[in-house]
Length: 463
Image (cartoon, rainbow, N blue to C red):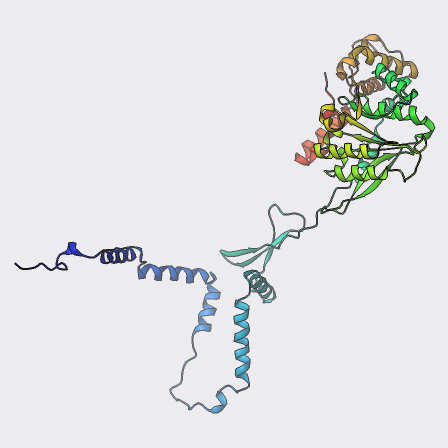
């Protein structure tokens, strides 16, 4: 019986041969036709050519070789380059190779310098254009001809991070306050604990503590415009005497260790016995500033703690303190117990749980309707103004439990029309500021106008 040849049948191929056939078919399928390659090269070469006919004709004339004569001359030795020039040409070639191996950024800069120095025909000079979204002085330059235009944009210069100086902000706020023509709220601010009409029971309790010399660390909690700052200053005057508490405003430079910024200028209020700082002005550097103030309050060794060398640190907006830093403050107060006292002003004492057990919590309530009426009547008596009960009631209602705004509304309404008449409109005292802001927004509607909004747009509610 004849044996069959396994290679004669197409189904008897080896596995490697089948794989080889598959690879050849895949290669033929992915192969790019030669005609398509020529077409792509042609289009790429045409795109690199200038679109000007005059430039095309000039390049064609330059590329056309000169006519050759039929007489052939034997090349002489003078036509050959001298031996001294061969190393020079080789050096130029080596330099070109080194330049080709440079980074792409350096090659682009060198090409841009060469293009800038090369003479350009009339009508094809580089044109500066403004970069969209760039700052002042950011310009780009168009390089190229016709449709082949490239834009060369200068690299932006990055400046070192800067910390906004609170001293500059304080100057602007002080200038704004100087222009404010409404002065009754500051003129009739209580200076001692016995002058308080609102939260009178709290003021009496603080007076008792000062009299019995039971002063400790304090936490004053309450909403905005309830009188926390006024109560703290009155407490300090009661403890040290009104003549020993001459408050001045300064700018203190705090060194920032381990930060990008080297220092920060902090606006503080200082006297011989206390220092005030607002955490809202510290731009995230609360830990550095409070640590510096605490270290400066440490008395020298073997010092006797008495009334003359007692120091108090008043921290406003203390809600911004982190829990970890509160534990550090608690450790510091326990380590250096004595004359150093600290007063926290916050909206809610629950935000200071880490130091709450070391302090006496003083809660200030918003003024009631009757208390606001009493304050307005007290100011009217001092100014010699006849204030009807109906006008004072309407002012108190429009201020929405904000005593400072009620005093401002009273002063603005009195300036607008006095003697008062029935049905007289109640002003807020912010009409001119609101008009100026609205005018600026209509002239230039941009987000930066948000910074020019007066405080009435944030803290005052209108009826």
